[in-house]
Length: 329
Image 1 (cartoon, rainbow, N blue to C red):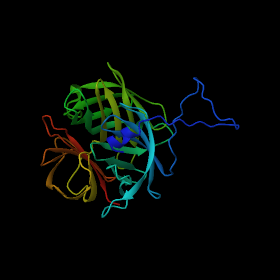
Image 2: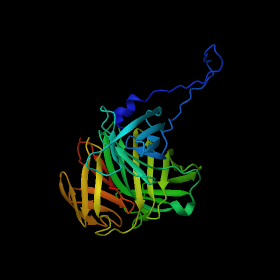
Image 3: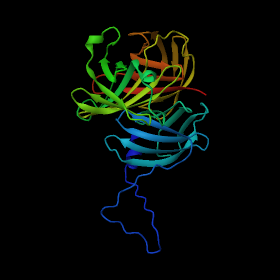
Image 4: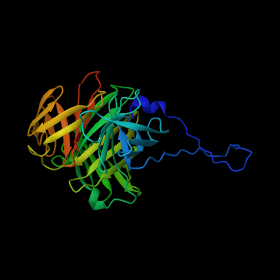
C-alpha cells in the first residue's frame, strides 16, 4: 500500500443489496456502506508516516491482502490485492503483485506486518477483541516518529520517550529520556481503552490526538500510534525501555526503507550491521537505555520478536526516512 497506490483507491465503495426484480433505488437517506473484503488470515491495525490508521488483513498462505482506512488525511479508502514472494528473501517477504505498485511487505505472522517503500512506511500489529489490561501496557517506551507536514519540511523524523501510566495519564519527551528527566516532558494528557485493541490518546490542551494499538508480547510490547497535531500527521513506534547489548539482535533481516522500491537484506552481528549501502556500527544503550545509535547518525530501537526500526535525519530540505527491518523467517 504505497502512498501513491492508496491514493488511487481512496474512493467510496457503495454496496447495495437489492431485493425483488425491479432493481434498486437509492434514497437520499440511504447510507454509503464501506466493507473491507475478507481475504482470510490475520487482521492488523496499521499506522503510516502520513498519519493514516488502517485495518489490514494479510493471508500469507493465499498471498492476498485487503485494507480499510479508518482515519487519516483522506480517511476513506478500501481495497484488496495480491502479493508476490520476494526473490531470494524470507518466506514472508513479498512485493505487491500489481506491477504499478512498489510496496514491499515483510511479516512475522501473527505478531506484526511491515509495509512501505515508494515514500511510505507502515507498521501493523494484530487486532484483539477486548480491552488491554492496564498492567500489560503501562511503562516507559523508547519511541521513534515520522511526521508529515505539507507546510514545512515535509517528512521529518524524531526520537524520544513516552510514558503510559496506570492512572490513565501519559507523558511525552522529545530527545530526552523521561526516566532521567521526568520533569522535562513536552506533552501530557490522558488515555482511555474502549476495547477492540485500541487506546485513544487525548492531550491536555489540544484534545484528541490519535490512537494506539499494541502487540502485547512476552518479549516486550510493540506500540504503534497514529496522530494529528494541527497540520502535522504522523506515526510513532515504541518499545519498552530495556537495556540492549551486543548480540541481542543477531540475524539476517529484510529491510524496507521508506525511500526505496527494493528490499535491502541486512545482517546484524554484534555491533556491526551490514547493508547494501555499507556497514554501520551500533552503539548500545545510547543516547540512553534501550536505544541504539548508528555510525551514520541513525536512531534505532529493536525487539526480540524480530523487529528493528531505524530513523535517519537527513537535515535541511531533504526528507528524513524510516527503515522497518524484519528478521527472516
